[in-house]
Length: 69
Image 1 (cartoon, rainbow, N blue to C red):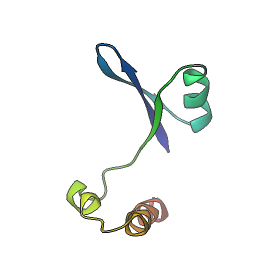
Image 2: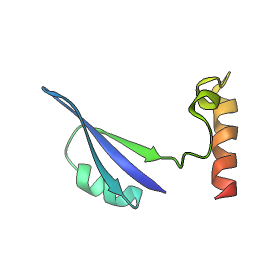
Image 3: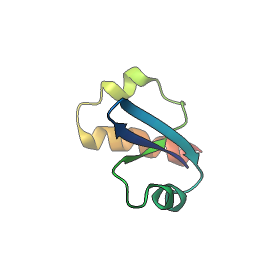
């Protein structure tokens, strides 16, 4: 899986990446506030993700993506 980093700056959010591993993203982010975001392959429509009725439902949809990859 690949990852992006989001940094909140005074000027706004900056997105950095991509990082091939979570360890690489953590190393880059070390000592800085920010978010590590998994970069999911777009094999499921955004509307399907948004319409998830629970966190469990969303987890199942995302697991199916990883199982099929």
